[in-house]
Image (cartoon, rainbow, N blue to C red; front, side, top):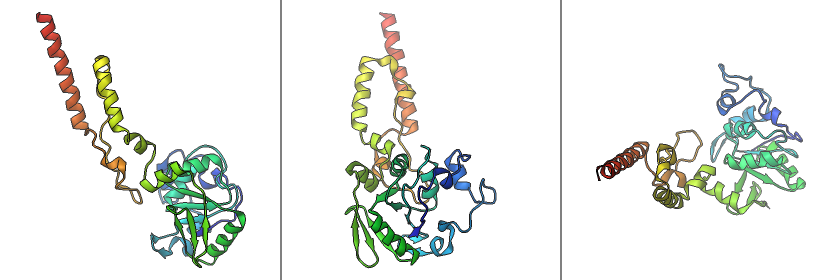
Length: 246
């Protein structure tokens, strides 16, 4: 667990505006990258960066000051923090858009009363371990004390099941298929490659979920998708030829 006492940590302090995409953010600090690593930044300190814990090397929880993540609506701030291995942030308050972007990027923002955050800041400074149990909505200190936090049930379900916006959509594949079938009957001229839904393939990336509902949906592969389009086109051509011959 790492900590920062900075209040109203602005977006530009987390990810300067000149970085325009996740690749640039990920490259920051590398020899061929786009930024210089700040050695005394809390997440770069050896006691946090190289610390071994139950979930591997490096801190996974950040305890922060008030109004964390204020700034613009860009997702660069959660990208940057998540890219350093942080899975949860604890603060007294968050900027609204940053809070939402954390949820959308699989990172948990936990809001607690100030006196509890101050206790956790002390624990972090003393290199004590804490645990966050999302299922029970509790922060568990090394001494055993538990702090309960609130979270929207919908967001909680998404985080527990590894669902992003695409994953949520893909859960509705049966309804989408029924709609497509009805549309094909009513408006066949709209059929084509751009109206079909290909199968999504799991991306190989460190610290990314590999077995979520989105990975296991029975949707067409790209080759099956193209073959279906060819078959539909051939059937329509054959139907047109039969009608012309009558």
